[in-house]
Amino acid sequence: MIQSECRLLRGLLGFICLLPVCISAAPDLCGPLKTVRESLNSTLRRRYMKMNFPINYTIQVHYEEVFRLRNISRLNTSTEDEPVQQRDLQDLWLLVSQQGIKRVLKVLPERHPTRRKYLSNLENLFRDFEALYKQRNLNDEERDPPESIQNIQNRLLDPYYQGWKSVTPKSLLDNCYRTMLCLFKECFSNEDDNYDYCEVLNWRKGKKTT
Ligand SMILES: *[C@@H]1O[C@H](CO)[C@@H](O)[C@H](O)[C@H]1NC(C)=O
Ligand SMILES: *[C@@H]1O[C@H](CO)[C@@H](O)[C@H](O)[C@H]1NC(C)=O
Ligand SMILES: *[C@@H]1O[C@H](CO)[C@@H](O)[C@H](O)[C@H]1NC(C)=O
Ligand SMILES: *[C@@H]1O[C@H](CO)[C@@H](O)[C@H](O)[C@H]1NC(C)=O
Image (tube, rainbow, N blue to C red):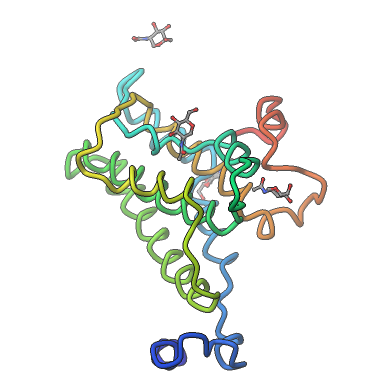
C-alpha cells in the first residue's frame, strides 16, 4: 500500500520520496540477506554444489558471471571520472548471483536433489531479497551507473555475447558468498568489527573459511 503510494507519487513528481512516509518504508535488507547467508553456508555449498556433481564437473558461463573479490577491488579503485558506488557493486552482485543460479539449474535434471532441495529454494530467497532491494533503491534518487558497470551489465544480458569460461558449480556460489559479505558488510560485520571481508588475503589464509 505504502509502496504503491510511493510509486504513484514518484511517477507524478519524480523526486517526491523525500516524504517521511517513503523513508519510513525503507526495508531492512539484512534479515533476508542473513537467510541467504545461512543457505550459502559451507556445509550446504559443499553438499549440494560439489558432492552432488561428478568429480571436476564444470559448466560454461560468461566471463562476467565470474564475480570475485578481486573484481570488486578493481572496480572500486578504477580511475574513471565516475566513481563506482557501493550500490553499483551490489546491483552487479545481485544480477550475477541470480544468473549463476540459473546457469546451474539449466544443466540439472528436473528431479536432481540439488535442484529440488537447494537451488530452487535459494532462487526464491534471492527473489525475495531482490524485491526488497529494488524497493529500497526506489527510494534513492534516480541515477545511471558508471560506464564500467554498464558495460559489464550489457555483456551479462547480451544473449549473443560469446566468451565462455568453464567453472565448477560450487565456485559460483563460493564467489557469491564472499562478495556478499564484502558488499553488505553492514549486515555481517557486527560480530567482530575489524574483520575485512573484502580483503582477498583474509580468505586465502582461511581464517573465516569459505
Ligand atoms: C549449515 O546449515 C545447515 C542447515 O541449516 C546446518 O545443518 C549446518 O550445520 C550449517 N553449517 C555450518 C558450517 O554452519
Ligand atoms: C580432477 O582435477 C584435479 C586437478 O585438476 C586432477 O588432479 C584430478 O585427476 C581430476 N580428477 C578426475 C577424476 O578427473
Ligand atoms: C572479473 O574479473 C575477470 C578477470 O579476472 C573477468 O573475466 C570478469 O569478467 C570480471 N567479472 C566482472 C563481473 O566484471
Ligand atoms: C571502496 O573504496 C572506498 C574508498 O576507498 C572504501 O571506503 C570502500 O570500503 C570500498 N568498497 C569496497 C566494497 O571495497
